[in-house]
Amino acid sequence: MKLLFTYFVPSGGIETLNRLRARILRRIGIESHLFYLWDGAGVQNLIHTDIPYLVSNDDHHIATMLALHQYDAIIVTCDHFLLDRLRGHGYKGPILYEAQGLGTREQALSTLREASPYIRKHAQAVLGPQTSHLIAAYTGYFPDLPRFYMHNPVNIEQFHYRTLPQANPDGAPVLAWIGRLESNKNVSLCLRIAAHLARAVPNLQLWMFVDLSLSEPDQRQSFEKLVHELNLSNRLKLLSNIPHHQMADYLSAVGDSGGFLLSTSGTEGFGYAIAEAMSCRCPVLSTDSDGVRTFIEHGRTGLFFRTGKVEEGVLYGLQLLNDREATNRMRDAAYSLMKTAFSPNRYCADLNNVLVALGIRPPL
Image (cartoon, rainbow, N blue to C red; front, side):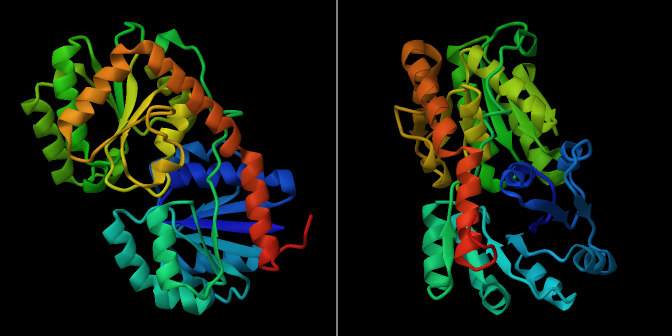
């Protein structure tokens, strides 16, 4: 059986998801190909793999790919306009529409409202993570379409904790942040919390993992201006487009430093940064951005603070930095959760059940 997974650009959590599921679905006899319209930094994670992929916005290339491979089904992530193009190029097989984020709650509702005619015309079902605002939107817009919700996989078999002292040779506590320089990720909230924490922890380091290729010049300028105003320049390490396999080294080092990952997003569909931090025994502090509720239980696997509440973020940040006994208990519980609820085998079983239910694949 052969599937095609599509998205706009290979970057961020969806690039991670597509690459991971392309590998693990081989376990149940599914060959997966990846298709992106535009080039992105995540291509560096694909170049040395055996995963078939295409990056092109050329109609001839798309039509040739579809004719050559005769996919049993295509899963289109977030791009409702591509549904029309695929049908226009003669693809007559099943298409499943998948939402994995779509920005804020308001943006997600607006996008799905606009997408509804395309999805109804071309898609056999809709897919998504077990995220409340996406579930509510799907139920509202597509009550008569098959709807499936499943946990995304986290490959703790390969992406996991490892001791690597050279990743943080000074051993100073590290506050880490991962995201794009855009409004929903709320980088300014991170910087303000970091500035307060730095007054209490003078040797605190700030590691920020970003994809600068996706940031607009004005966003970068605003970010640099705030870094300067908050006097964070000397403790900031800006890391752009780190290869994915190296992120386990960095996240493990953050946890071992006595630091934590801070997530300041307004809304997340899933939140791979947090899931992968937990897989590397890195403590997490996050806004309640919906998707992360799947794996953060406040006080047990991580900590929540209210969006925009800098003082609350600082309070919980100091708790993670100072109460090592409680923090270590959360690290253990989070790591255990990643090994069970988000295992690759569970994802394979869940997606297989979807394909069987839709008549795309016979039962195993």
